[in-house]
Length: 457
Image 1 (cartoon, one colour):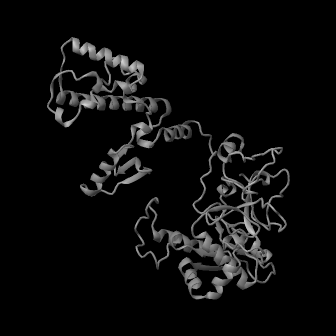
Image 2 (tube, helix red, strand yellow):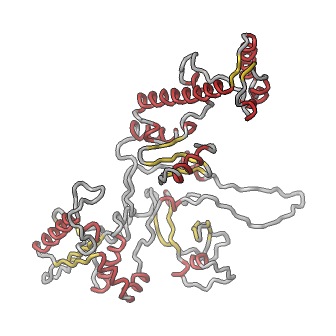
Image 3 (spheres, helix red, strand yellow):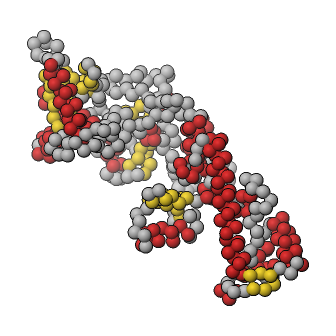
């Protein structure tokens, strides 16, 4: 698979068999080729040793040996050769280490002394069959040992030995609730529709002139068995509290976009769109019976508003909320930092030259850094934790760099490049003007600080 043969296998699958296999590439080579239940993987990813070393490594017995073959003798003119043993030079002894070379020479002299006859076709077939037998026996033995020791089937569940080791750790040694499964939309927006739901609730808050409590502002409010997307209580004793519900088309079974009401949804347990819609109606009716004023909108309806009403779209663009970026802890790590203060300096012979090197990020973090256990405690402004010496976590905030800095210290990425800038707008627009004329608001950039407020370089 890592040699040239993987390309021929893939070509035959596509051109002759008309298959569309999934592939895990590694440069021009292949880690895996899979189609339906057929999975082709490379044994070298699990057994990084020569074929001749497998019998001894797995104790397959003295009778299981790779044998020796004169590869340099295997040319077209010798296809039908039957006769004395080919000369020793055809066995490539000049490329062997002393131990293997001695073994081959002793074997060859023994064969010659016994008057052995070399039949090219028979020897070639026997040599290839023996190679396959050794590889099969070695792989089966390795698989049996792995299943007995780790309860992991390496070839069925993994692609490399590293993956098998990780699977072994996860299955046998990983403590409960140690690794968090981050929601697809991040911790703040746990569903894909929540981003647009947040936009709708903030627009309702603006247009009505009220402060609505929601996921991005104090958290969702529980009412009975449900949590509501938005909640506002006027507390005037006259008007009822208002509940805001954003109905995602897929998650609430929009009748307009999903006409097939009784088809079981893929990957769900006997759930249909009609069942989702029924549960949505039941929730809204429950809230109304409790005396709340219920304001709801379908996802498709709000998307039409964003498309048709420029005023709404412009306001949301100008007022994107407290935490625009979806914080990812990877954004707190900035590797590859370099700097050049002066391009050339000629010493007078009395000066000492110094070279400052930043500690490499990956090994440093693995050696000295902390690993997060379980789900984090997410705090959103204004309900943030006090940033003092007791705080241990990550902070996503806006930073206004001082203009007087000769060496900007806070890293940022613009155009997929690591930069240290004093103005985010200049960096974003690649403006190299000597004097920056942007306002403070335009110079501000989002910044994710690492443990104890430190950036990880």
